[in-house]
Image (cartoon, rainbow, N blue to C red; front, side):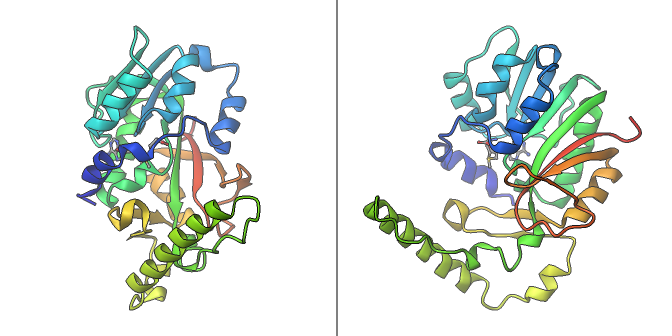
Length: 263
Ligand SMILES: C[S@@+](CC[C@H](N)C(=O)[O-])C[C@H]1O[C@@H](n2cnc3c(N)ncnc32)[C@H](O)[C@@H]1O
């Protein structure tokens, strides 16, 4: 996991989207009456995909990332002002912020999965500390339920697209190579052993196989959050459909909306 920061610095140009994903759009709508009164901390902002929307609508916006290149891009593209700032900051240490400072804390696009187990637990405890007692934490994570059936080595190659044949051929070939390489990587893996774990660190082939990604069982994510002082309000799947992490297998990445325990 130690190399992940170097990888993010190297792959800044891959982050070109400024659109919210469906789960974030749902939250945007759910809290529509509150944004103009909200003090927000946006963790792992990357090049500012979520900053683009949220910095324009909240009362006060702080975006942080541990990658200097990502923060540089945010400052250049989104810009700072009296109520919008970007800090170079690792989420494992939020001591520069006041306790209970933020009403809404976001850690989008599985950014929390870039760190190992102990750092993840540390981040959750830091987030709980700087979140207002009536605040919300919204973050996404990879699910270990994707392994092995929905893991990239089992990915479906795209069907022929007669409207864009060249684009299709390029995508097909890229995916085929990735699938072949990842199959080789996991050829001697004890699948059962991984499936029996509450969490595991796995390479998915992202960023040219350089990045390591934490995957967690949905039911264990609930426990991990409870141990850190949170209570799960709702869980969304990739299509922003509500799911039950204690009763269902969720074989795709998930967004958790949490509040402080007992609030
Ligand atoms: C998968 S990218 C997502 C970027 C952006 N949120 C988006 O959705 O486009 C994860 C981001 O989290 C940042 N990140 C990972 N671990 C972090 C940590 N411990 N503290 C701060 N930022 C972190 C990375 O530098 C990277 O920019």
